[in-house]
Length: 217
Image (tube, rainbow, N blue to C red):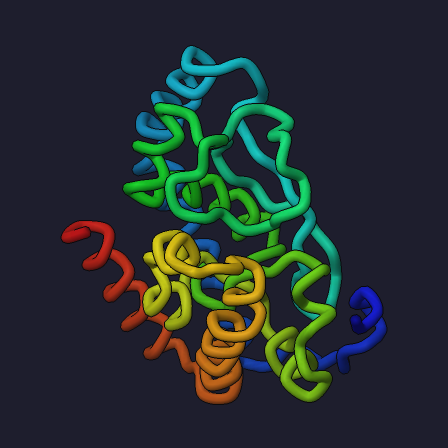
């Protein structure tokens, strides 16, 4: 198995007009989102605390732009310190998911706290979904460098295409093998295409598609 990913493996690039424009758009959407969703975020935090013991947020190490590691913000939807520590993916009707967590996951509200990561500059509204180091180490080197040249995002074409990923994995005989050999390569193709062709206009279209999916299920 390849060694763990390190931050020195990807090239650096200077900001250009597109990156500046994208960052400004991220700030506008992140601030607006945190303001608009503030009552919902507070209600979800209270519900999580009342439903099961443990913190409101689930923090996990992910690989960001240029291989920099950061700890992502998500609403906790599982029991605190789940017993199954091996798998870093969620499979189907996972017994570790709490009652409130199941409702939150079904509506993708567990991802909303990542607006904090967008505001802090660790993530973008649109970009390849951030992966854990264990799986990034499996990326082909040339693909890894390109995908990690942009900030990871809240949404991207791969996230939309595999929004029912947990259900797909539940039908597999070996969930992790299915993820590594089938789903991850497909998501990487989406991520690579995004990294090579993204514009502010395509970002706006992806935001619109994501909002439509959230609204219609």
